Length: 355
Image (cartoon, rainbow, N blue to C red; front, top):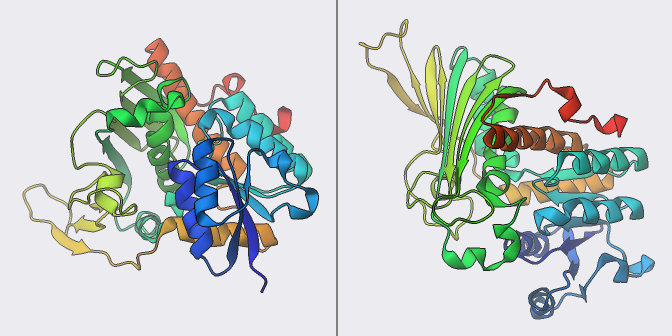
């Protein structure tokens, strides 16, 4: 089978990770890097790859089979729209947009044109998460009651030298917690309501450096997320999963899932269950659930290739990306207003088919 020609738009941190995987995957060829910056040009030249400042600079005969968009959040809709208009399948990094209305327009445009949009919530592709979902759906935990997630990291000062990371549409809620929210939706279903608080007391940027979120799911599950990019700690997805070797790894947890029959820690998939009717005075049995580890970015890339060839539908479609973004938007509204925000407020969240 002929390798697919995949271009990467945006040569920042995540864009370069995507480019590396496209170059190493036998079924793909990195056809171009699209980035107007000098750093993007230098990266392309260093890798021996064609460089373009803009997608429109690529001639029709040289256009790729698919494009991975890893530009700043604020540009996702603009970039996605031009690829949909060109009829090219797109893997669009999360969040699908920094605005719900704009995201809905992009989803609607893709559906009208019949151009698939795969949103880069790559953690869903992680075999560990797939194993966790089997445990949750298989009933080994009983009725899921409550969930907790922690994202505590200390981003260095130079991380914020890039202006968009200090501006609206960035911040740990949009950039980081959106991953956790998407996984919680994948594992526990639709969110019914949220309550949130944010603070920027450490750096005083326009965006928050810390957020505390409560979520109520339609199933009745209650969840909390505590996130900060200004805390020195080992409790985060990045620090515990080993997914990205650039981060130090610690033998700690980032999620705890609690049910009436047992509980599960993530990422180590330690399962705690009772041998009889649960009783807080009785000891729990400890079991480590095995799974075959794999790089979720590579798994996602292979899935994107199947989508490009028409052999699969996106696991995380534009609609799924929009649904997760709606939760994030509700969190931001709750933090601003101090009120609980219900996701059933349809007037606040447009349906892409009505746009």
